[in-house]
Amino acid sequence: MKKFQAQPGFVVQAFRFALDSNAIQESALRSHCGAARAAYNWAVGWVTASWWQRKAEASY
Image (cartoon, rainbow, N blue to C red; front, side, top):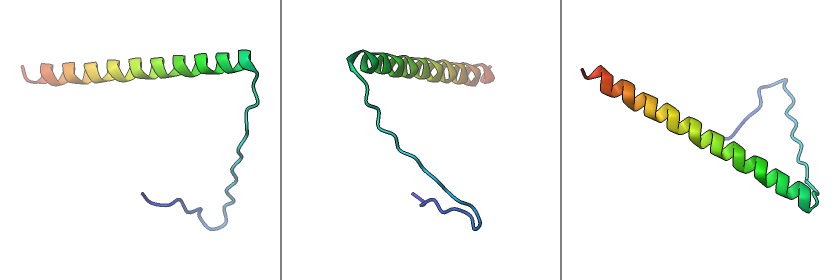
């Protein structure tokens, strides 16, 4: 994998934050992450199915 190199004259900054959540907040974060993953998987499945359908229709 190619290593990132900033262009001359540009400044690159990165920030890292630690989340210090309590039990209720952690549960909510995990729930949101699970929902995002389910939505992503649904979208990938839908696009893949559409792609295969179009490929099959092109043959006839």
